[in-house]
Image (cartoon, rainbow, N blue to C red):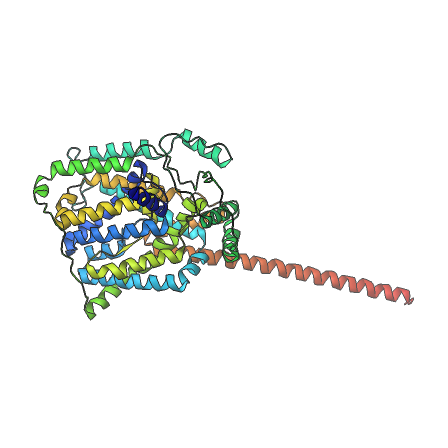
Length: 511
């Protein structure tokens, strides 16, 4: 009885039950997490056991806080700079604390909500498109080239090209929707009966607050971007209440919380990868030792705070604000707004800030949320916080059982499988940008995406803002010219009327 009540309480808290699809979705973001965590552990002495336990606890928190598969990822810019440049571990951790603290202030003060509300959606989707294509390219590189030597992988072996091709074919055949599924989605959008087949993830009934948000999202779905943004703000201020229905409403195709995939592809790939790693890494298996690693307190010096801020925090901050908060919230609205589970920007910013302000002192690598991870976990079947809670439990158990001794075994995990997971994540994130319905928005989106690919997310956002400013200035100039033309025409008509009136007066006087 007690265990059953606890299980039901947990399911209500995370928004769903743990199914094979949820477990598969939990593995969808390993292509980002594993390579960066291992690289930091080998090159900068990151305590992998402490990071596993810390990020596992982060997962547990986000599962209950957001009730969607909100990912926990390494801060990519800080990790890349720490790996490639002369930045120590304490400087990277100091950069994580500083970045988290700034984002936390933005979230608590409400400034992050203003940034998200005033960022045009064409720019957000352009950043998503650029980041998605970038992730897909990195996935292809990881699946086909050795990350250390950059040479093409051999065809045979546990990390050979054949493994990558087989994994890619399997993922394409099982993850992406078929024509029948797409037709069923269209029928559901048109009000048809729910005919989804296969195993379905049983979801907890939405709360009245979620029903209210769902109603608002459905009303806003048919509106243009600018009108929708204004109406969203008005609805959030009105706070009208909506009575909860007796039965959970059927979910539409875009915002539904039922997984379309019946094959747990990512879970199968993860299990196959673990088997191959055990088979090829016998020395790494023998090196495993039981027991957690004792965490170390990291207190950066004054110079480490300064170098960490300049070298790592400054490049990371725009990426965190734009991708880890603004873009994540936009994607969560697109995927889960129909069931009232869109993540508010202030909550996401506070989550990123608290994770790093609390965890970096103990040696947990700097972490954030990410649109790519959310898209990947959604595509592989995750629809609720149950997937994230499952992944967090696995990380905590592994960290407690093996600690940092797990690193060599994880290093034997076939890189082509991680590359395929990353490839699917990038394709899924890029595909969410197909909702720009006008030519101007498409132009701004593509410019933003192109600059994001060429440079970084912050540069892409700046290019998109510049495009919007130029287009707005052009529109205002055209409007001013039209108004001036109308004024001149009105003045000419008035002068003509006055002349006619004067001539009429003269004729009346007989002059």
